[in-house]
Image (tube, rainbow, N blue to C red; front, side, top):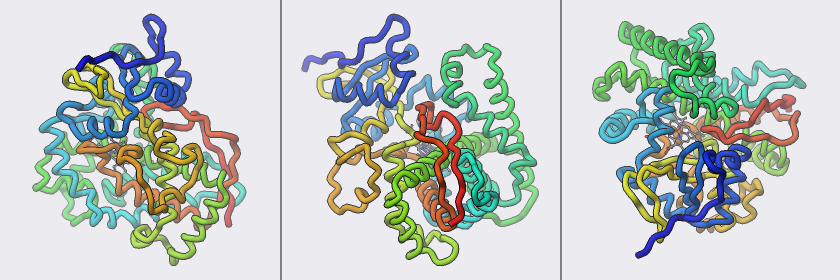
Amino acid sequence: MTTQTPPGPRGLPVVGNTHQWARDPCDFRERCADEYGRVVNYEIIGWDAYMLTDPDDVKRVLEDTDTFPKHDDSTDRLREIVGDGLLTSEGDRWERQHEAIQPAFYMSHIRNYADIMVSRTEDTVERWRDGGTVDLREEMMRTTLEILVEAMFGEDIDLEARGIYDAVEAMQEPLRPRNQPVTFLAPDWAPVPFLRRANRAKDHLEAQVYDILDERRRGDADREDLLSMLLDADAGMDDEQIRDEMLTFLFAGHETTALTLTYVWDLLSRNPDAEARLREELDEVVDGRPTVEDVFEFEYVDAVVKEAMRLYPPAHEIRREPAKDVTFGDYAVPEGSLLVLPTWVLHRDDRFWDDPEAFRPERWLEADRDRPEYAYFPFGGGPRRCIGRQFAMVEAQLAVATVARDWTFDRRYDDLDLSAAVTLQPKGEVPVRTERR
Ligand code: HEM
């Protein structure tokens, strides 16, 4: 079979397509998919990129981790921030870590975290005033971080006093939309203030994890939190590994859920019928405080969260790097290039979705859902699929149920201005007026 280089948009000398990508990555990728089809070749920040738009190709890549490991350069940068935990490791090391950690995310354990999820969300709404204004994104970030830290370390960790909240913020600063170009392009020795702050924050978080580990070893309490599970002798992890995993969870486990919740509220505020139907289900199912049993009964709440992640997938693209020359159909993709699996594009592809731009949670309730498995992959797929996906789904639904019981929001912005950094995020604040029902 003769192979050919996949088509793609013409770029400029040196910068390639970086300028088109940087202006609006989501729009750029959608236009490329429309125009060039199955495999699209472009160049961003010096990387020779190949975007796949066929769900079966996405499946092949995600499920074959030997041929398609993570993209080396992107992962190296991430490793500098979060260490060598589950998100960034490869091969045997990843396999051992995955095996040790997976039981902590079984549904039987997630049940134990449900009360934390509801309680910390209650703390958030207790701070609100009827008629006050809050930044929704910030409120959701704090809530999901508080939930995660308590699920990881137990209830006696004071985020504020230990400086954990500020440190997590600083650790993520290099990946904020406005900072990302510098983060990815600056040489290691460059004196960039936010990179220094991020390094100091990482040191601080590492010291905190060691400190908590010490305390834990001195105490004798029989605990149910994530740290105890990793400390369990059967898990066979040394302190350094535990530290890296804890940092990874802090990084991977709260912003994505907070963004999902922000998008849920944005979409509901634009779709009053959907909001009314959601409340109807909540009134029917929840008796007093929401519980994990309620989550198993929710249909519409679940559909709302899924639909929000379809339209606004926090992980808007997934990256891999072929370990050898490969072909997709008769298109050749070389070893060492950047493979882009564009969640955003496939989630809005009219080959698989009716009226793809519309927020229509009902589509998840329809019996006849004949679409390829990888037309929807907000949590990735294959062996490297998100380990926290069930945690996140239970958490998001309990948070929605807890907030929607008493509160509704009046938007104080027109449209969300989004930017596709490592995660898909609103560029600025998301101000809303909080109204008690
Ligand atoms: C809505 C919320 C979430 C979304 C959209 C999300 C998305 C993702 C995606 C797409 C991946 C795969 C990345 C890749 O293949 O390159 C991933 C991996 C991962 N996620 Fe999540 N995630 C969420 C919540 C969480 C939570 C709550 C945790 C932990 C408490 C978590 C921890 C992780 C870890 C450790 C990995 C790496 C897994 C591995 O490589 O084995 N995530 N996530």
